[in-house]
Image 1 (tube, rainbow, N blue to C red):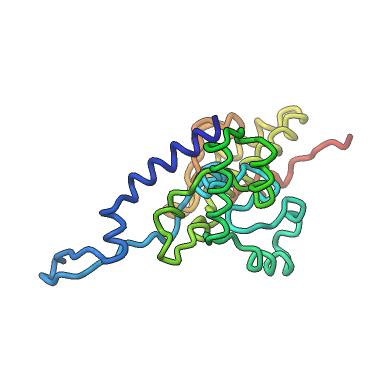
Image 2 (image 1 turned 30 degrees about the horizontal axis):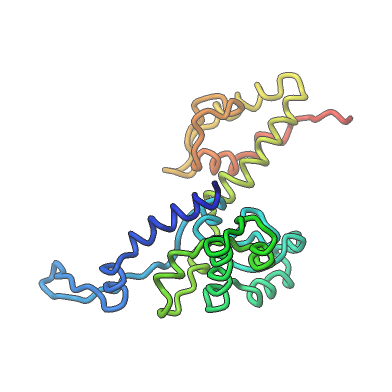
Length: 242
């Protein structure tokens, strides 16, 4: 089912990246500007904002596999080194590339699946793909940009909203709420403090209109507000020792 989902998504992208789009990408498209001068514009894809599950689908790699990063080949066992100087060097040395070697591995795996009827998760297929956490789906970006030195892995940057505010920070806040649940009345005090907080600036901190502990109708901007003001609200809470 996961394989069909990947194939379906990239079939859609192949329709979007049709011959008309590729001609505009290579030769440009002439547009008459408002000043009366005709200018030639070239379509370019600089970045693609997505959360991790969507990045996995678009970069055609295994979800949380042995090499889970969409941009590099750092093994899962080295993730704890993130932020170190060694990690910075390894990211550059082991960056994923859309080259002939990558494309040949995908085609070889597909030949086993569609030509010799091997299952997607079979050992012969996984021997080809698993070392780099790849999947047997030919990427639409790889197929449509073979001659433009376009490395599609590089367009998937870190998305702060999805990966921090709605990802790591949201998980941490849920854990903090579970800790407060062990203290009688602690969540009520927290909700009162948030509701009593006035707005600050035009869009820096918005008013909290409901009980935060219920986590109802919270968007990314709300989790951003929580993160900015959390320290003051948690500062005087006393957590009993166990």
